[in-house]
Length: 301
Length: 86
Image (spheres, each protein chain N blue to C red):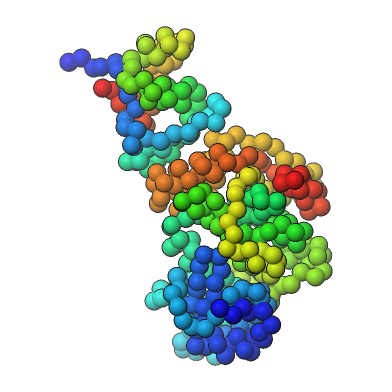
């Protein structure tokens, strides 16, 4: 399979109209779209990912395309489809790539039940993975982006996939979704960081995606062993403080961030308990990225 | 009719639990509910699982605990479906 590296948006767009296969971690998506925004996003942010011709087995068949009727031309809107399902309301065409990303998340969250799925970021350093479940607005993605740009391997910004056979964390290594002030914070943190287009006025505010590091993409098939569960919370002006959290409490809190804990029944319980067994559990408050990075370095030294 | 004072874990195939220090969580497969348990609930589940059915008085004597407390915990565990009279 080829990669998107060095392929222009125009070249990808030509292939996309017929369909391409995008591999991210364990999943293969068949993607069809006539939207240049999707092609530009793939060219910029999936650089290095396997993007191949329209063939072979795929886990998900997705498309992003214009709605029918006047909205095809006047203030155009796009829909995301997975097979014959349309899970979201149409969005402005300028948000096509963000919609594509959210759609891919939806596919995994609603169908990936051969894993325990937590709404959490996952990063790895020195063979030890940190799982960060968090509510929206807790600063998870900002911290994730800063860690990745500081050399940590990104497994996921959005979903922890826990393998039912060995309890290890399975990478996705997809772009990091940053919102509102976080976009400028990360631009200032690393001037060489590569961003996709900025989508304004989405239901999450202003959104832009950050390209995953080359190392994260190169190792997207390499699972990681859990070592820490950290519940982050950005608090303006707060010193960076890591506080131990009881494991039973961490269990219940992490389970509340799972997409499919209840669906998996006893297996979900066992996988979650194994994750807690293998991990030290922490609450983490921070306001400054540099302080946060220092503490994370000591966690996985 | 006599109501037995002997208790047992509902079924080791239906109830799973883990301890971390003084904290425990338990899962009941039929209800698919997960419960966070305070001590000595986890210890009592362990004891019943290891030694089979026990009376509340026997458990209290073995652990040197207040029988009233043990009976109250047994009632709580039973209300969650984690243990049954036998």
